[in-house]
Length: 387
Ligand code: GLA
Image (cartoon, rainbow, N blue to C red; front, side, top):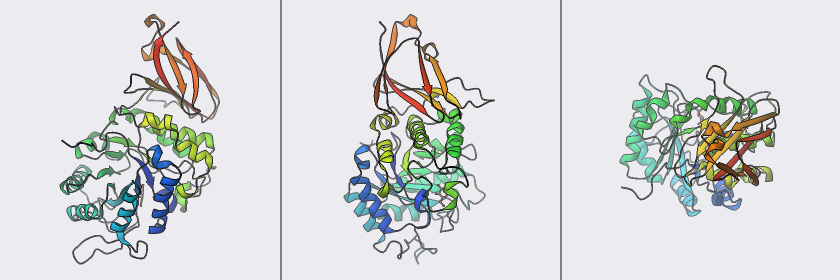
């Protein structure tokens, strides 16, 4: 038995892709690690600094090993890992189950054990494993193969599978040993995409839990369309408002998704900093029992755009959340009967609203909230005797 279990709660960190795309280098990664500490992100629980695609040379070395691009990473990956570890953080990297990565750098297909050893030798703690240029072999076998390769190194490496929710991945991914898996396509920095991803996950929640969480993709909170590639902004869609980013963050927290920041954490405004370090939302995300929420009143034929969710927490409290993804302000009522607390139980809920971090009083029989378009409320509730 190990003393620390990888994947017990969703990982938290930063990933280079959303903002930097191909323009990733040692300077950006070091400065982001510095920022992680200086801005209080590390103290709020963020720990992984992850380099996504485009870090390697296009050719393997004479022993068939991946090599870091020396122009982008002149000190090499081992030195970078040491730097990151020296800050009390962990280091993540990226590869792919196909012959090439999505940006056409060498992939790990048929090099899995060599590459896993290279990552372990460099001090890597997290591997994101993509799905491009995959041979005609079933995905289960490819993810299983890399999982075994990582495990056989003897190093604790969190395995992040990324097949975009395809091939009924939720049916088989947990058995591969992946600690998290992408249950959706790539996110874009706009409300339309955030909403689409959130709604796509309502029926997928039962698959998510400790040791294999649904990954709703990197957060776009605080990007304000400043990512350096066209794809991430997603065309002509408007820039997200802070309300929309707050709902995005709250939903990812409530759903138990990994929390991987994608904005430039060296340059966050106050609203972003406050939001992504909101301890009350993070505590729900990081709850040690890792239970997924249940969303209520969901009709599979007509996905609702505003709904309540319930999540059981490990300390005997429950989290209740109202999400309004629709374009109108809504008055949302949750009869407590629907969560098993009718007034005949003699119980009520003492609630704290976690987005605004304010006490919300006692609710008996029902909770009614006015929730603005694209807004949300997330309550952490203690069960008490109703007066
Ligand atoms: C895929 C993944 C993204 C990112 C890119 C890199 O699209 O889903 O998250 O890693 O590849 O090329």
